[in-house]
Length: 82
Figure 1 (tube, helix red, strand yellow):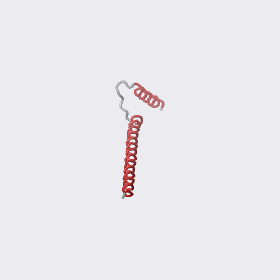
Figure 2 (cartoon, rainbow, N blue to C red; figure 1 turned 120 degrees about the vertical axis):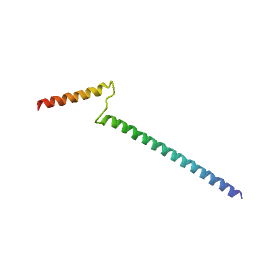
Figure 3 (spheres, helix red, strand yellow; figure 1 turned 135 degrees about the horizontal axis):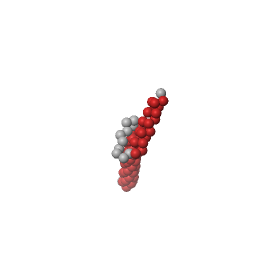
Figure 4 (tube, rainbow, N blue to C red; figure 1 turned 90 degrees about the vertical axis):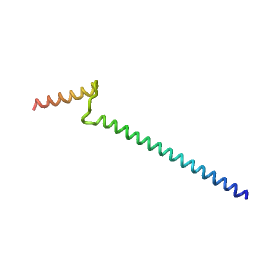
């Protein structure tokens, strides 16, 4: 009977370690999934802000206003030469 008790404790310990290992793997996979989701979200925001054709200028945004002035001046100069 003692052999069965030893085997039973060994099997229960192995089953517990297997469950602990599966919990750890699922936790790591969930963390990687959330990290991937945030990276996609943040890269989409950056892509939209830098590649949006109709950028709305914030008050005091001098660099974007200067870029638009340069584009408008270039198009007006090009229009006069034709």
